[in-house]
Length: 275
Image 1 (cartoon, helix red, strand yellow):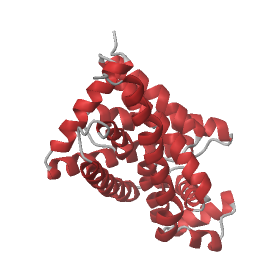
Image 2: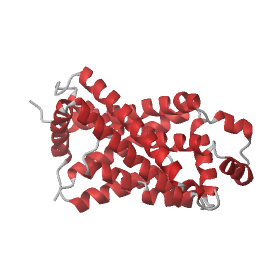
Image 3: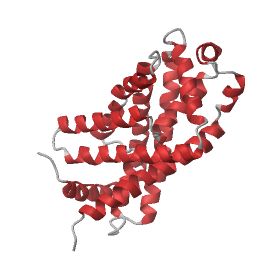
Image 4: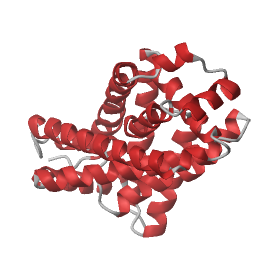
């Protein structure tokens, strides 16, 4: 048994009201937790994919493990920016105000960032990037560089596509009434987004900062040059400014559009209880 789309919309509207009433410190703490959980999925995905030569199979390898991050978010009640874009469902009937919606998104975004960066520091310190004689560190640089240098239009479009899928996964998990159903939905829909290579702002908080950490290690940069041909000029492009301006800004806007305008509001208008 599962909830109908109409029932899921009403359930999420109720959840939106509850989220808006959550004390700021608790909401922020849950956001930090989600940032770390998504970072764990991203880190494990890099481990799975880093030594797979075929691009398609490499993405599939990452996609098989990444969804565990969202599974943890759902089952542990953490707050994830991309999922919380669905709070836009509460706007048409003023379940929450626009100000409350914006405040929630800012808080969850900052919390996710703190969690993602903290997880990155732990992973870098743990020695995980040493795997395969430093090739994982080199691969981490390669992934981060690709994201930091993506064009704005690609980042925006990819962000929209990503959060159509992530938001759909969150709603479908709400439809499921048992743990198995929630896990299966989380796995297959998120696997689709990762295999497709779409851009997720919270995951990128790990991917790019991990690359920034990795580029400070001479062994990883040497491996990046040897394996991927990444030179000093390209490494210079991997910096905080490009992370923020070329990736996180357009990807975040795309994620908001995908989650709020492409999923939340259409689902509300197609399924809400008419008065």
